[in-house]
Amino acid sequence: MMDQREIKEKVNKGWLRANLVLQALGRPAEYLGQALEIVIDNLSKNKDVIILHKKIHEPEKVPESKEVFMTFSEIEIIVKDFSKLIGIVFDYMPASVEIVEPANISFKLDDANAIINDLAARLHQYDSLLKQMRMQVDILAKKFKEIEGKKK
Image 1 (cartoon, helix red, strand yellow):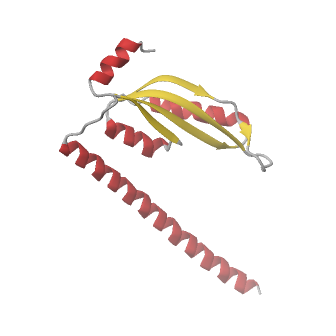
Image 2 (cartoon, rainbow, N blue to C red):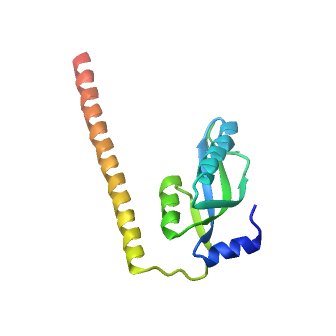
Image 3 (spheres, helix red, strand yellow):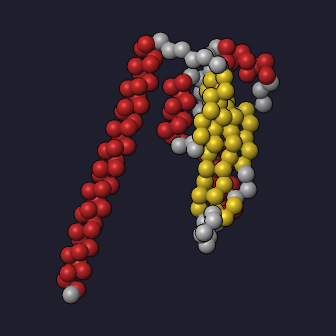
């Protein structure tokens, strides 16, 4: 665990201090905490991320469901730079991200362009995957109708 002085030194060198909320939904309830532990462990293996604090809450039953549970974790991190934080958002899909420090963030133009282009590339990847899945669903729906038609 880092002390406040060490954290301040990192922030002064350009690192960001942030709070993340990660959620897990599913069943059985006892697996949700384990799943979040695995996710947090994977995050901690990133050399550009230091986990300062984590708390995993007990799973609760989702209202109006029979067997589905939800839990979440609160994680305080410091991360090397804004670009790495955006990578975490894409890779781990937190429900919430709050940058705590520094109070002001500035970018060199080249860094801002790199961040924006990385963001655009990732969005294009996700869009491409979504389109592929839609085509596959359409193909499966057509095949299902063909099979259904042959049965009648």
